[in-house]
Length: 298
Image (cartoon, rainbow, N blue to C red):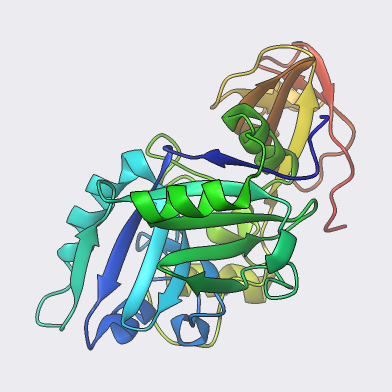
């Protein structure tokens, strides 16, 4: 992909939830895979909220503020997320707010004046009610969120060229950034989505939903599949099955999660069996062939 060195794009696909109150940190600590105690106004985290079987229900960026937390997740999931999270509040002093209407989220490519402040993955900074959170990977990128007018004023002041949403999400997929939605919820454990490789999981912070299953897989070393990225010169659909050559009985070797069209085909992410290397067949055991780059975790 040929991208400019810098640019911005509004991302209506994402929305914001605010969790605040005296018990907000303790409450989220007992729900999410990340160690919420380490989240601050200068350090964010990527977190999963799982079911009791250890399967990820939601993935979110978790930003700290002076009075609570901002959670960034797919806008289409927020109503379901907020309804479910409120069920667990009980007597805790916690308020859960859906901020989709008054807030917006943008993506920024190239960090400019923020490069020194946002020196590491998930480093955050906030000025004038606009929050910036650096994403992992290269080229440098950040999510920017705030009330709609403040966000637009910040983007206008930066005078950055516009990016297309397709370019942003293609880069996201190329970097194998984990992303799930309602169609892929409760399918994968956090390790299969590489949250442990990203340093975004705590195995010693205490209980949260699915913690026993997730910890057992870590200490027994039985994670058998991982999130990978790839490119194909033909159309693919989320949920498509991938097959290794000669797989007995047509046994699947992976499943496609996200697909973004590009000029010469698609960029995609898929959860792939760890013992699979090289060429894969898409859709059927004798379907079109695609090749994965080496697993960066090898």
